[in-house]
Amino acid sequence: MTLQELITKLNLTVITAPRDFKTIAPQGGYASDLLSCVIAGAQPGNVWVTLQAHMNVVAVAALRDVSAVILTENAQPEISVIEKANEQNVILLGTSVPSYQIVGKLWELGIR
Amino acid sequence: MLVANGSKLPDSKIRTMPTYRAELHVHTVLSPCAGVEMIPPVIVQKALAMGINLIAITDHNVTANVGAVMDAAKGTGLTVLPGMELQTREEVHVLCLFDGLEQAEAWQRRVDACFGELQNDVEIFGEQFIVDATGDLIRREPRLLITNVNMSLEEAVDGVSVLGGIVIPAHVERRAYGLLAMLGFAPPIFEALEISSHVTAKDVCQRFPNIRDFPLLQSGDVHYPDGFIGVMEFEMAAPTISEIRKAIHAEGDRKMRIISSN
Image (tube, rainbow over all chains, first blue to last red):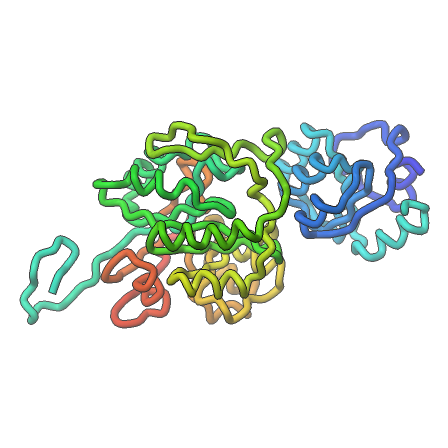
């Protein structure tokens, strides 16, 4: 499953700069809004699902080298956060759907 | 009776408490998110230039630069309270303020025991400089400071209170690390709450009606030299935690107010 397929199937908004999402294959996922848990628990290549959208989300995503961050429940990052994410090659995707449902759909799509 | 300048007043005169203009949430170069300009002499200079005579130094999870700022402020008329902006297990930021370095250092030892294993990644989070009173580098703090320590809000309040300090949740309305965003309510263990510089007390109370009973403080959460706002005015006998506490609760002629809002 490539990131492009995920974006299409989950109807995700691409918040950061467009990339060739077909070349990125997320490996498993992690869901938490507590950054310290993400630092400790997320693995490189994971999709990270959260409703936090502040600057340190980008820092933690870069630190853990996750393949993408899915911001749920319409969490809207500020422009400065999006700029930082582009700088750090962090992919931010958005959805109005709550984390619980997004995680369920990811699981169904085989991101485990 | 003594007043601010130390002169005696006849008892018949009405007593007035000295007024303190305060900024109780100031970061130094030790906080990775703060500007490298935030060295002790600059902090002291900027505070004084704003007419501020009481500040608290509150770096993330550490107190190591407090002494340097206190030294830099000696003889300037600026009072520096030792403090820390603690990030609790709930991922909530709270200010822990103390009267003296000794209490702050005792608190640091408690917090140190609750630190995780994570090390700072300078590229991602920024530098964490421990400096002397002139701002010269002494060493770098290797631990990641922008993260939780394994301590609950209740443990923080208990521990700080035992040492004579006070805990004030920081920027409570903010989505990132704010008490109301993280918990959804303000537990009654707190005596007062801090709001951010870019909001007004009225707006925050409208958004979060359940905090109406809490006294509110406002601060600049100063990360850069131009971040001082100095909107807190205290009328109290001395710049101490027990007097601040009385001012918060408007006890014995002490008062606290937000004089304007940016």
